[in-house]
Image 1 (cartoon, rainbow, N blue to C red):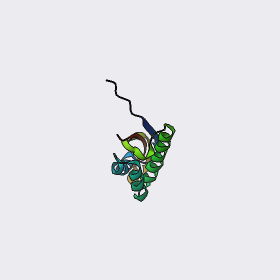
Image 2: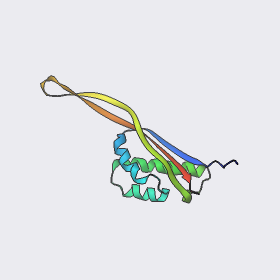
Image 3: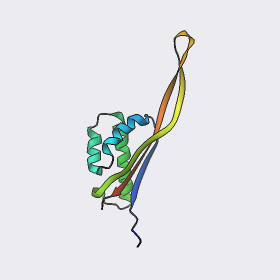
Image 4: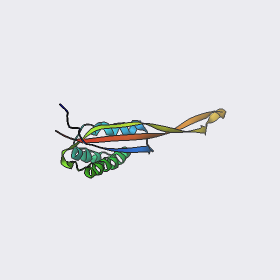
Length: 116
């Protein structure tokens, strides 16, 4: 018995100039939620990462529209933030020492699918 393969819509934001830890605080709020609820949560969340994730979610919704998926029936199947490359700089400190400055980047992945 062959099961029908479910359609999925994806969006990826690579090299987002924000640390993955900060993004994970926001994506944990919307994981597994319906798309409309997730957008409402993101619009009310007062964090910089919320704007980035909201834009990415809207992109995934547009991708779902192009695949003729039912927008009202979509939910977030998977969302994750992974480490990107790290820019390393040194800042001079007292007594001839130096401290490393780490500029962290992240890759954010989102997958939407339709509910049964």
